[in-house]
Image (cartoon, rainbow, N blue to C red; front, side):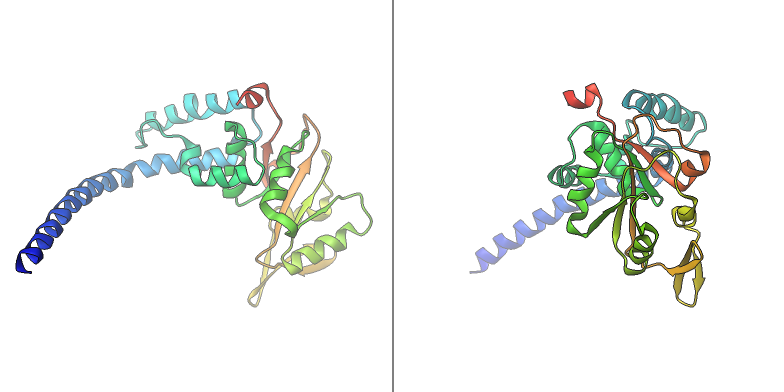
Length: 245
């Protein structure tokens, strides 16, 4: 019995010794990551904020050949070989998005990461309806589809804001009704513990669960700078390289 206990104790000590080495190595890695996370965060934040409207080739040129070079020239530490997509998401996220109906090409994964991480409401350029297919799979039966041309759309948006629904405004043009500008820009005011937004002449209480997506079928829309500032514009147009992937 004592021999057996001694054997178990030796194995436990040996296992803990290996664990000590692992933790020492991890501690060194974490110390380095404290520094490199600064540059990684800067590039990833810029990626979410600005990269969405552009094509795959221009995206790569922008963050690899311009942003990373600029970060390096300014002496800001970052991880060698950093990829904003891997900072914003991981393989598990990609698998979940694929199950929700998202194509597996690089641009689609980037678009999904931007949608999930952006604090502004996404406006997706989606002539082939790939984006809306994924969002339907992501939000399920909770997604309410509507357009700004249907009767009573203002009341429908007010109800969605108040009750915390998830709505998709489909097929918008280059001009977005200024009535929803305060909503797009999140011009909220606080009254007591509740947040309110003005839609038309009404102050509407904002439920924290409210979500909004905007979608256009236009291939090359031109939006005002105000719209680009209010929304995160994301290009879901299918490309030849995307089809190959």
